[in-house]
Image (cartoon, rainbow, N blue to C red):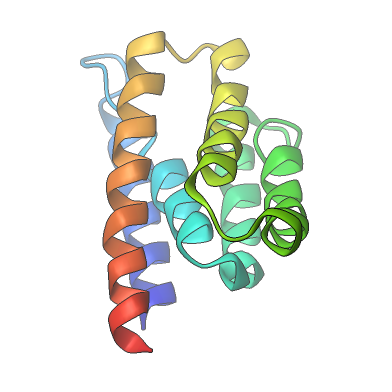
Length: 134
């Protein structure tokens, strides 16, 4: 259920981004939701990566914006979790790595900061939900 809810909210966020892009600075709703869910539980890559691919195609007409960095996240997190233990610094680094790909494609620094803030919030909420589920 969480996967469908996140994908629906990402689709809704993409609609907000497309509808209000010229009138206000706003975060990249879809990317924040998808990356937040990937950071909360790395096994979510099965449905997050196709969502990020659709995000890149909708907003940038290319798969080479956020998808390559997001594809590396589960693999790098597996390696780092094995060698360093599960920790916040490596996840924050991966968050910044994936979201910084927005900046060369015309997103403002304010929108990037809003996206990072929303991603941290989504990551926190979903991590808490996954912790209560186990």
